Amino acid sequence: MSFQRQDWNSRSAQTLKLKIFTGLGLCCKDGRFLIPAMELYQLKWMLLERVLQLHVLRMGIVSLAVMAAMFVYEHAFLGVSYNTERAPRLHPYDLFRSFVAFLLSTALVRALWKDGVPHGGPAVPRLPLKSILISAGVTVFALWCAWLFSRNPQRFNALSLEDGPFEWLSALFLFIASAFFVLVAIGQLAGTRPGGGRPVWLAGFAGMFALVFFVIGMEEISWMQRVFNVATPQAFAALNDQKEFNFHNIATGASELIYYSGAFFLLVFVPFVGLFLRRWLKGSTGAAVMPSVFVLAASAPMVAFNSGRWGVLPTQISVMMTVIILLVLVNLALRHGLWKEFLLYAILAISIVAVQQLFLAESDRLLRLWDPTEYKELFIAAGLAIYAGETWWRLRPSRPAASHA
Image (tube, rainbow, N blue to C red; front, side, top):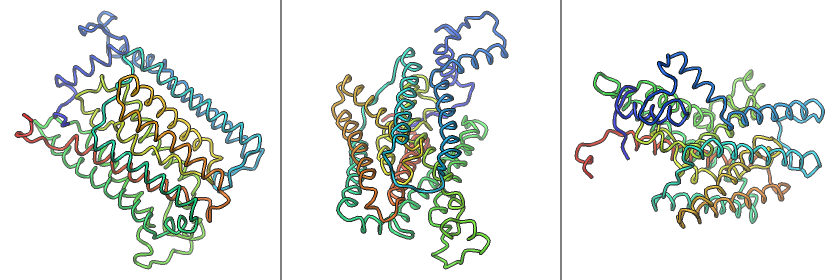
């Protein structure tokens, strides 16, 4: 699917604005505002009021407040530090934390559903066969990784070591994602010329993602420190948890929390939100950068690889929300007679629960508590590469001959 070049004043953009204002109850279907002679500032306040009424926004604020309160309590009274890995436990407070995570996860998905259903509900697409096969292949690979751990923890550990195959593969996927967004940025910059019709923000968006993914990829391999045999400066080594030339290991817990939570938000939560917005965004430039449900399905296994940081509340929320979202997709696919998608989402949900349970139940067999997160980073990088490739494909320059296909 190719997206036509457009700006905010084009016909398709005007149609998109009409859909948004109608959906928010600000105007009639014929484009007439419900408030006569509405001024611009009135429209802005009305939009802000409607946004603040969103159930998912309110629930998100409540969730952040609960997470902050629990973080303060655990740090001040239990001596828990998110910067250190610790084996999963089944103490009463740990079970309470998991119960809170389940409640928040369920409430967030329910809030999103309440906001989206009045405007038509989620539009569940039929996935192309190649998308189903790729997603199924990623799931099978995740199950193989779990099987490898259950049979041979030493080999599981060896594949996750620094300069190992999975670390370099993770970096490669991130560089591929960065390259795709470089191509997108170049194409969009060309489209911002007079007559091009492409919005400037799209080039900036792509350039930002290209830079971020490149930096993360270089961080993954410590900026090729070991390739060029560069010693870590003494002052830098004193701050770095692994004595490496990178920044994320200066505050490993915080950097991993941001990276993993951000990946869940972009690769799982946003695609699910996009199902409720497809009718509004159809044909617009915004739809081109919205990750698809294919990205969600191909990236979902990443949430199951946790052990040493299972006690971090956002980690549990990401796992539980992913499973709940997949169960929602299972129900929708079943209701629409999409049997292949039904099987894919059902197998994904079951696999995530099984793999995560394995790492929790047998964490004492791990040579390093953080070994599963090295695999998680591989799945995240692959998901980001798929998202970047999908975005580039949608925004690639259309060829005149292909326009009649």
